[in-house]
Image (cartoon, rainbow, N blue to C red; front, side):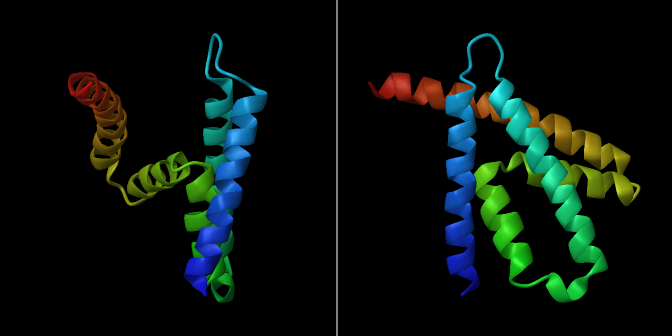
Length: 121
């Protein structure tokens, strides 16, 4: 049952993200992506606190909303929460490494994917 919820909510999140991207196309600056990432981080922060303070709500809604809805909407929210959790646990160096490493590896991954695709054509 929980996997069906993840699947359904993930589809809703993906549709919302694409609808926002189409409404605010990337011309000069990627405002849609910036807004989606902020909204996803705001939502995961609120849900994290709600689920931590109200444990009976955790399953299956935590998985459906966080993994499904927000996972389809933006995985940047998970990145934001994980970085915050590292900071909260007193692991500032790990948080900085994780944040900078994620951004750097993301850009390198995009460049490598483009290079691979160009080499294959």
